[in-house]
Each structure stands twice: as structure tokens, then as C-alpha cells.
Length: 407
Image 1 (cartoon, rainbow, N blue to C red):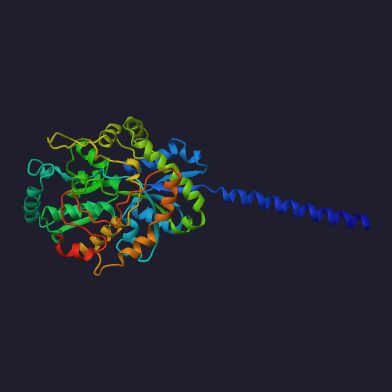
Image 2: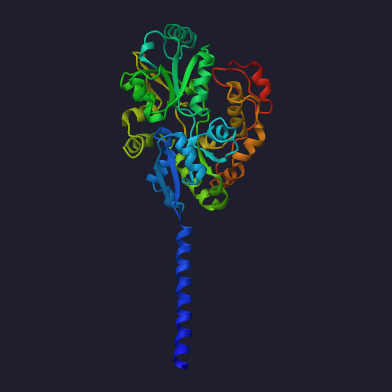
């Protein structure tokens, strides 16, 4: 009996050690759980894709799974549920969702850093070819209006309510004196824009590259204006993350941000843009013509419709510019929310500053920038105006701007 008791004690201790070992293994696996980042097939997904392809996530000690998503609404839902830890995202989307324009009001998505400036475009169908040219704002309104009178309704497409493409489109319509109340504006995912224009589902669209370039290459439409002509160096995409991920896995988020920041620095080297186009043009990523991607990355726009070529130097798509691109500005968040009021998405002004403070991870960004010796711009919350619309926007007083701006 004594022997049996000793064996029982030995077995009990062995089982305890084994269970503790298994627990430790699972704990280690859990701690090393991969970070899941999504992207939409657009040229400006490059910071996330190239951070993966260049081995930068691995360099900073974090495993990242990168997945192609079908639409911005899909990205929104997956970030909110935690199916994605973060994603390449329209910078204005978290504010659209939080205010109830593009999602359930009060839902929090956090902006960790910006990914790029510039590089979107408004494309018109070939029905307008020869009637309105590149940047011809004075003629655009009357020409579109005449088509509106003939057909009773002109249809434009953007990619998400309150998203950047929606805001650039509505600003262009206002600048061209086109009545938005008599124009139909629909939502189409970016990769489906060209196919929808091809079958006549819209008269124009606003989306990120390369789809404006692809429409011109396929002679389906032409680039009426690039968004950097509307607002030079405008904010565009951001790294947007799940609220719990940003709080509970902050160390991993910092590693992700460092890897993406290094990718942004690499992307701004002109000699690296051909390699970028060759990689992101592949089917797992953007799945589009490499030459079109490369040309527009380099600021060489074949406009279509016999309009020739427009060259951008210094205001083509940018990813870093010494840190000027990557800093998420609260003033830009407030500007976006002011547009929601301007264009009738919101009946009343939201608490602009409080929402910007809640959704932008400013302190975390500054921590990452300091660790990488990247300068943080000192221009946040200062008044500014767009390139084409000279109305001064003071982020401390959006109401004054809304009293004078065109709707």
C-alpha cells in the first residue's frame, strides 16, 4: 500500500508538471498570435504590403498576416468585431462611423498613423470626352448640367459614405457648381469602378489609383481632375486599428507602426517605385497593370480622351516626406466632420475636438516617431485652405467656415 501511495503521489506531481508545461506553451503561442491587417486593392495599400514583402514586420519582431478585403464596409465590420486588428483605411472612415454617417454611431476605430497623401482622381465617362477637359472646372458644371437635363439624373460613384473619395467628389461637385441634390451618388467598391463604368452604371467616379489610370488606359473614361489639384498634399489613407487591440497589444502595435513607417520611407525613394508597382500589381494584391501603377506613382498621368499627359512632381502620391505625411492631424479630422455637416450627412455639428481626441492615437504616434527620430510637424490645429477652394478652415471654429463655404 505504501508503494501504491508513493506512485500515486509521483503521478499526481508528474501530471501537475505536465499541465503547467502545456499551459506555458499555450501562453507563449497566445503571446505570439499574429497581427491581422487588411487592405483594399489600391496603390496606397503599398505601405502595408511592402512592409510585409520587404520583411520589415519580421525585422521589428512581429508576425503579420495581410489579407485582401472586398469593400470598405467589410473592412469597417472586421475592424469593429476584431476579425482584423487593423487595416489600410480611408482616414475619414473612423469619424464617419463614429458619427453615424457610415456605421453605428459611437463605434470606435482608432487612427494610429497616416499612410499617404494625394493620388486619387475623379474620372468622367467618355460621354463627356471633348466637352470638358482636365481641370476645366468652369465648363464641367454646365456640361454635366446639360446631361442632367437630358437624362434627368447624372450618377456619380464613390467608395464609402463620408469616406475620402466621397468628400473629394462632393467638393469637386460644389466647385463645379453641380447641384448635388439632383445628382445621384452611389457606393461602389474600388476594384469594381471601371467595370461599372464600362456597362454605363455611372457617369463619373472618384477612387484611388490605379483605377482612374486603368479607366483611361482602357479608353472607358478620362481623368477629369486629380485630387491633389483640389487639395495639394491632402490626407488620404490611415492605419486604422481595433480599439481593444490598440489597448491590450500596444507593444505589437508599436512594432507594426515602426515597420510601416520604414516602408513609407522606402516608398518615397523614386528608384523603389518600379519594384513597388511590380509587386502590388500582382493578383494577391491590387491585380492591375504594373505600368499604370508605376506611372501614376511617379506622377505621370496619361489622362485619356486625347488630353495627353499631366506630370506631377512633388505632389504625386507621397508616403513619408520626412514625417509630414504620417502624422495624424486632429485638424484634418475636424475638417472631415465639418464636411458631413456641410453636405447634409449630419443635421447638427458633432463635438469635433472631443471625437478627434478620442479616435486619434496622437501620443502613441509621437512615441513611435521619437523612437525613430522622425520629426512631428507643428502645424496641427492651425487654419488652412484647400488648393482650389480658398475658403479658410479654422479647426477651432468650423461653424465660421460652414457659413461661407459652397454646398
